[in-house]
Length: 216
Image (cartoon, rainbow, N blue to C red; front, top):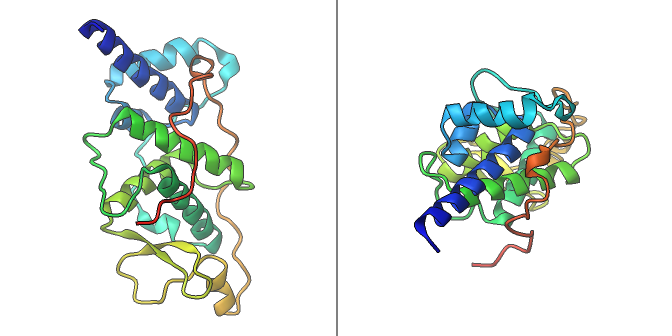
């Protein structure tokens, strides 16, 4: 294989991932972080494959990406969904014990695994509340481990996403309100709609399949 062929393959993978992220309404900064493409290239991709095809109906998000870990810790419904998403991150291998993700050196393969986990979450959860932008923030926060950590509910053993510095015992979104004698809180914010993957990215094979987590 010639060097130019190898470069073409790498660029094609980046473009496919960028279109997949655009389909999830990711912001330009998030697309740049996970693909390595320049802002100008991202804008051109959006203009060529989305803006010129109104039937795609994909929103262009503005503003800053999420930065608050507390978003995933309340209400109980959000705790449950964050735990589901975190479990999928572990299953596809993008989050693992002792491994950290460098936000300045993310690979295309890692971006594809993030998309796979998020798309699976959308298929599993009824009326999902976590946007792709929050999912991308969650995976980096869990991999970094400074504010959020994975643990298990003391009552039922379910996987939980917890504040690393919390003094209370870990409890999942189901057991926590039950222990306090309170009804489960209503979910905050509108439900997420199903992902609209751009036509140019449809048919791209998934890089992995979900399987059981290996025992270390």
